[in-house]
Length: 203
Image 1: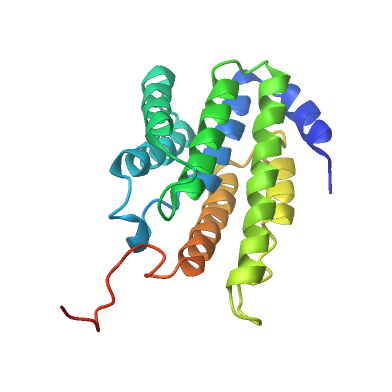
Image 2: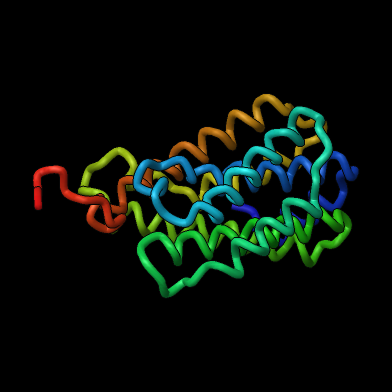
């Protein structure tokens, strides 16, 4: 498994368009879990910001321009309103909003290796934390209990910096990651955790 510094060095050799794709793929992998039903009733502003980050990242893969200022403003407003010590999902949301803003720092300065290092390190932290979540919260033997996000992230980053990049394969790889990531988060929070009423309980 390559190190963050190795990954940064490979990306630094790419042109700006390819570097932007690297950042967009990061957003796709980690910001696409906003649609879980247990998340729908909570924190509309943050949910919208994560959804727009994921949507904008997909747009980059389609060759569309990225509205960095608008997306950054939306993420900053959502982050200011979040409380990591608040109700269910709040710490989860805050961690991902912070990550998204750090990726935007890189996308706003594509030659800034320090910003890219921060984004990669944060991605590793999220991957490792959700590997632990899968092991601790899912039943033993569950197909996702040993999903290995940290290894998948390392493999994705190495592949994303290939020249030339197979954009379709890169997108499919990141979307598969995002799907598994969303499933682990959704399975790790119960309806009760999310404040959803037990349908079997009546007033």
